[in-house]
Length: 265
Ligand SMILES: CC(C)(COP(=O)(O)OP(=O)(O)OC[C@H]1O[C@@H](n2cnc3c(N)ncnc32)[C@H](O)[C@@H]1OP(=O)(O)O)[C@@H](O)C(=O)NCCC(=O)NCCS
Image 1 (tube, rainbow, N blue to C red):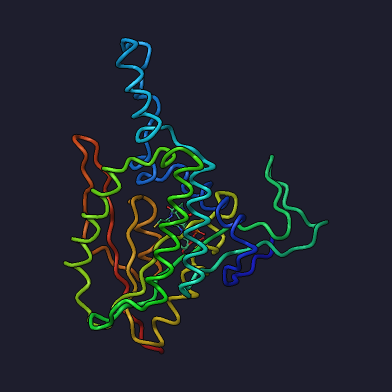
Image 2: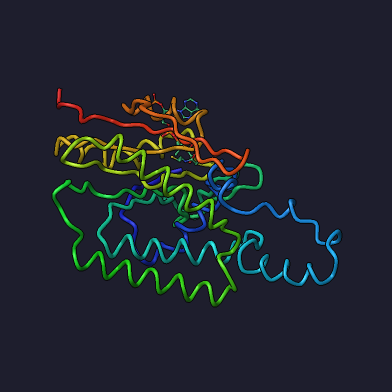
């Protein structure tokens, strides 16, 4: 199977969304931040409480809605492209008669099997540009429309989202000591059928090589300790901190890793 790494184009957003949803389906952060419908047992609730309960459920505690999630991811990808974020995809390029048939799996040319989304480094002295501010407004508006269209956040647990944001900000304040800033790996995911074939490494290298040339460090957070910490260590990252997003007894651990720029040999 031949795979090329190319910048994300708007025409590939749908494929990238599909790939991310599949790659992160069992991700610990994803399972922590989105409501688990199995916790709800409406049959035990008296009818009047149930009406209120159902309203809250629809607006705040609704089950995971894959279409709402896809719309949100698509809006974020569009934001990323418009903000010139380094976003790469891994795309199958082989001929149609060379389909990979692996049990039920068939990968046709054009299938997106990996996505790597980074943010460019922000030096401490740099302030936000007007264009990024405008893109954030557009993203918020699109998310508002998604809330209306899908009657809520599609199962995102808002309080957990804010817990994560706060814990993440505290980690960045403690760890991001380099005044040049960091290339921040916002997400990298490879479809299960294409894992272990070097796709993740190529997606990471597309930015790590640039970071090395510029003498800038890279940073990522992974909610999967095993096997990701080992995988990223092989790419030159070091585990620098383990942080916890805690909601009651339900904890999501994040592994913070930094890669310092490598000098050319
Ligand atoms: C993490 C992930 C992106 C890695 O992508 P990948 O394409 O499977 O990784 P690669 O094939 O490029 O492997 C990179 C290196 O890790 C090693 N590796 C891959 N899988 C491994 C595993 N399960 N255990 C140990 N090492 C592993 C490879 O041998 C390779 O090392 P090398 O350079 O010495 O040969 C991919 O597994 C994934 O999408 N996982 C699910 C989503 C996720 O957790 N994303 C990360 C969020 S931060």
